[in-house]
Image 1 (tube, one colour):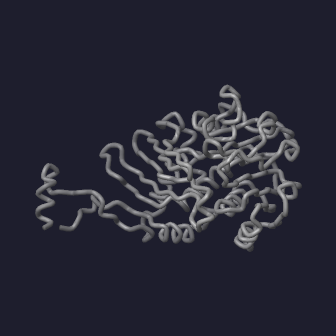
Image 2: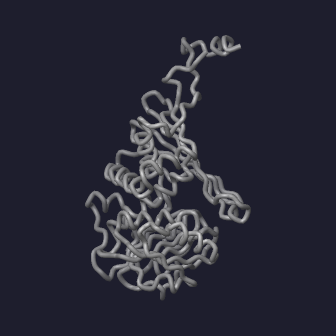
Image 3: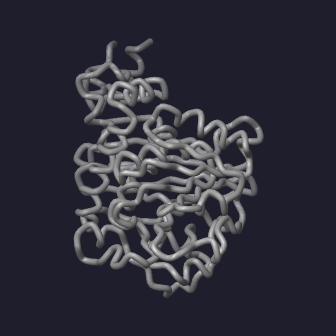
Length: 346
């Protein structure tokens, strides 16, 4: 028995995701995901919100990230295993699902390893468009792993930077990133130290992978007027910035209840003031207020961003061949006769 169309769920494989991104263009995909995130953040109060649900181990963390706006439901399964790169594996892998709240039926299943990199870059640059100093042209990219190229291209496309200064403790990672960014419209400057990388940078992005309390930036490295996009501190026991930097900065977050557990601000008192980005986007709170202010986006990733990315992909694949119809829902002629459907299949 052939499944009916209503029992087929669009599935976007890794290969189809890559082909879709090439079809649309990397920078355009990032920009369009950012627009969807901004639209959803502006209706923040419509969403169910909960910190992601973690299962920690000595090797890393596996998390579920669910949310719903009452009409659609989405979740992402994602891991974070910094030790994986030493074994030739990805630090982060993910997949996600979108469903119709009215029927409970899934409407999209997709890889989200690549999509997470795209939505993380989209979120970073979207926030940067609100917080980075006007006229910023140079970004320091500290940590040149799997996220780095996406971050650089996002800030180019959305914030107008034309120069990236790269540093990683692994020179091969810097060489990889520099090679991948050739011909992308950026001046790429490989650097030998973090201090060298931040010279002349108005935006500093930190994205390192070790699960530990690290000090990638010390207080004396951060001058007035910069915007720090801190995306590497994203689970308990994993930070990148000296706490004195936090005390000098105006801190912006996605969802405080999650960021206080997983972000840079886990090093601060629970009542330390932070500003939620949805409030900035809706005009209920201020972003950057002067040229000397240090703004810090303590980014850990939040389920609404994944929901936005899932909704974007669901629309983007319409009328294309960049998905497969997946037979994953039982569809008996009589909804009460599931056993009969099983027997007829014999």
